[in-house]
Length: 123
Image (cartoon, rainbow, N blue to C red):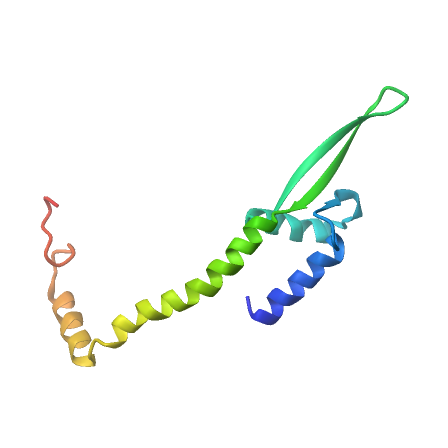
């Protein structure tokens, strides 16, 4: 997702939560709920329910969506740090010359055994 899409999703999500940590499921449309389920799969939301006994003796279940703020903060920090780490790791491959890449590509294509280079069937 682009930064703009992420910001729009965050604004959309916060329009439900505001300053609270939880929102009642009854406020959501089916489309909103689909988005919340997607965010739950990504680990950003979780659910809980409360059971209330009504005067008529009937049990009423109230479902809530809860922001996992610790997870959101951790992912935001990891993303900022992870971008730098990934770039540093990619620099190793940038140091390999085109001739070296071509040489390894040629020697790999000459191997007809189907096994990775340097390994036989016993490994």
